Structures are given as structure tokens and as C-alpha cells.
Length: 432
Image 1 (tube, rainbow, N blue to C red):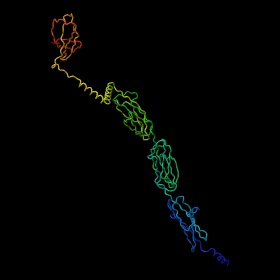
Image 2 (image 1 turned 90 degrees about the horizontal axis):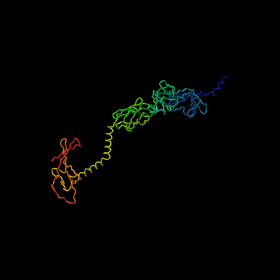
Image 3 (image 1 turned 45 degrees about the horizontal axis):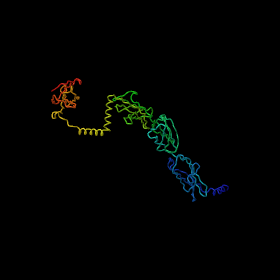
Image 4 (image 1 turned 120 degrees about the vertical axis):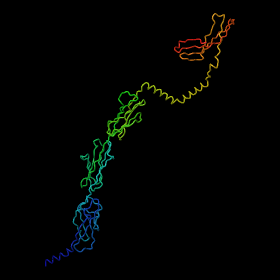
């Protein structure tokens, strides 16, 4: 009787058997960056009721989504490694208490870092001394937090390490020095093992200093035809260096120094090469110009006279040419108009010579000085003959004296023979 009473009392209290909730995930092993769906399923051991059910999903004690909902499914669009953990769900009706499912562990699978590379700015790894160098470590894929590290040299001197949720990270050297010329590489790791980039060379380049120019041997005298060496050298600066040589700002030529140092240029001198010389050094980081160096080409005296004469003539004919030609033409025209025609001695007789007069009453007749007129010159061997006319004038008398002798004489043509041997040795010989 006591056992029956116990069963009677328990029957209304126990009622139908309780439902069992199960939580599942699709996919069960999701990858980072993908979606995942949680499903809360009811497995009843007795007849189901028609009561309205509500569901809620939890992770590590925190409700997910919008909380209680009539849907037994919850979509998580994107999951990451930090979404790994313990999940469960609960079900409830308005009349009954909530039922909780067993916990399940979900591990989100990450994507390993892959295809890591190192980029350098400025491009090409050529950076000027004192400027900024940027090393960028890149990965084409990888999920979750990625740890990036930068290394210098093949021995792997660690420069910096940083962790961030991205596929790229950068490391900067604000002002590079000569010691930063080296090979670099980087690594990236998201927990599945590091991925290493290839080695990248970085060259720190220094601008060239102001070059120094030397022209031949200092203090040496040079002449036209000599060959002098123009030597230009910058004391510092990254190779290669291109040198250019100038004479009075006119380019003479250029020479390259692939390994640095100086360069030379040989010049064959002429008289026009006197003046100032300079050179320029350039390695792509800005050209530098040397100071001017004077050079004097010594011209011998004979050559200098010829150069001076030709220079004067060139200057005169260049600047005064038209004027000189006009003056010469005027002088020629004036002589042509004013010149008398030459007389032919064979066709025209010589000018009459005044008669010679003798005065009786005079002890010594007074005569005017004789005048000789040179009419013609004839050359024969070493002797010169000249045809001379002799003229003598007489003074007028107050009373005409009685002429005791009146003999009219024509002026005689007299040839004088002149010896070429001596100007003072003159032998006058009457030819007629």
C-alpha cells in the first residue's frame, strides 16, 4: 500500500520524458576567413508538445547574435582563429524552463602565411646617404595575426619585430649611413611556421665632392703641338662617376670612372688653347664643378708675328674691308683721270734749249746755274746711260752790247754714262 502511494504521487510530477538538445557546427573545422553555421537540434524521448520554442547560442558564457530567437540556426559570416572555443545552445518554452545542450569545442583553422617578399623604397635599393630607407615585408596570403621580422646581412641581425592583422608591414631607417649598405630579408609567421623572403641588396650612395682639376705639370711652359693631361678627381662619392672637361665653358670631352677615383683627358695644344679650364663630376646625385685653372700656351716669336699679322689683317678686312676697297677704288679712279699720256721720245722732238749768249764786254759772262733735265734712261749690262738736256739762261743787259760773235747753237743732247758699281763714281762722257 505504501509503494502504490509513492507511485501515485510521482506520476503527475514526472510527466513525459525531457527533451535532449544537441549543438553541431557546419563545417566542423572551419578555416579562418570562412563562414560557419551553428545548429541546435532537439532529440525528444517522448511525444513532442505544440508549445512555441526559442533558441539561444553561447560561446564561453557569452550569447551570440541577437540572443533568443525562434530559429534553431545561427550563421557566423566570418570566423577567425580567435573564434575558436567552447559552444553550446539553449532551448525554452513559455511554460517550461530552458534546456541546455552539451558543450562542444570548435577550433578555427588558420591559413599559413605564403609567398613572402621584401620591397625597398626607393625602388632599386639605391638610397642617398642621409635619406630614409623603407623595407616593406609582404605576404600574398595568411590569416590571423602575423608576426613580421626584418633582418640585416646573411647572418640575420634582427632589426625589428612587430605583430599585426595584415598581410604587409614596413620598417624604416630614417637616415641611412654607409654602414647600411648590406643585404636584407624578412619573415612572416601566423603560427604555422615562418615564411622567409629572398635577399635584397641595398646600396647607400654618397654625392660626389667638389673635384680638383690639374692641367699638365704645374708651372711647366707649354707650346703649340704639346700634349697636356687634364686630370679631374673627386675625393669622395659613390661610383660610377662621370667626368666632363671644359675650356672656357666649351665641352672638350668626357671620361668615366666605373670604380670611383679620377679620370684623365689628353689635349693636343694649339695657340688658341690658352685660357681657363674646368671639369665636372657627376654620379647621378647632383653634379659638382671644379675651380677654373688657367693655361697659357707660349707661341714662338716668329709664329707670334705671323699670328699677329694675320690677326690684324683678318680684323681689318673683316671690319674695314668694304671701306678700304672703296678708298682704293677712288684713288685708282682719280689717278686714271688725272694722269697725262706718256711721250715717246722717238716721235716727239726734245724741248728746245735756249741759245747760249756770249757778252764781249764782260770779263766773265754771268751765267745762271745750269739745269739738267733727265729725259730717258737706257740700261746696258753693268752701265746706265741717261739722256740729259743742258739749259743755260743769260741775264738781260742794260745796253745791248755789240755782238762780236753770233753763233746760234742748239742744245746738245748729252748722254751720261753711270756705272752701277758706285753711285759716286760717275764718268761723264760726251757721246756726240
